[in-house]
Length: 338
Image 1: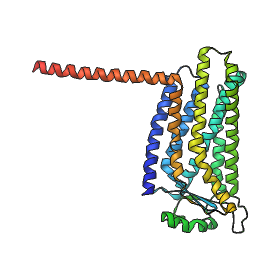
Image 2: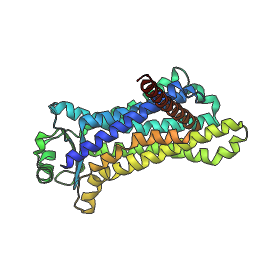
Image 3: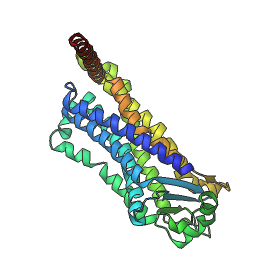
Image 4: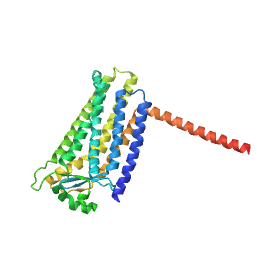
């Protein structure tokens, strides 16, 4: 029953992400005129990553269970897809999730350079922009490979969580497509899988440090620097800055905060002597809200998108009125000839 609810939530968030992000991509490519071409591609790329993330979530149906010093990352899919494919899918979903965070850092760096070191924007233009688009794939690949290198299921991990998984989910652990992270062995020594948690925390914290640095510098210097810009440039840059702030708050609330207890519990629970039984997979449902939230926030903040949406609403309303008028005219004509 609970997994059915999780599936329904995933379907809703996927549809919302697909519709909203596709609309954002369409507006950016065909209607927006005052956005730099490089930033246009960044917007479209970021929106596409959100759709891909939710697509893999719909296929893989990932769930997480924290039990004492372990984290079981498994698929609850009941499809006829093989265990190997579903296992690969949840690993890919982890990589795509990380790509979103890393690409936000790239966007902050680009906006910072546009504002304060405009001469360096050449490193983001033309063919060079391809390297920045490619960059998030590197840590994303590291995350995916980390699952296979350090978290593949073994006898120790399966035995550690077997009774817990049976009691909570009524499933035999070996029947689930899974990765198992167990921080310590029977002697209390650190296992190699701890490297995954350390690497995850290091990569996320370092990129968030970049986001915070650029954000604070932009906030502290924006008034002084804006004096040399035209009124239109000031307005546009402020809108992009507020949009990026929303893009920082969004992943903080929907991606980083939910992920923190998932990663930290296996490391801290044995050290603190705390017993943990947490169906933390429900936090993944919260993560699914993010792609649509980010695009809606961006289209709400940037004026040009609001103007285009208002024009589109006016055209649709005018078309509906015209159709109603034609229907009334046709009805009147029919009655007249009768």
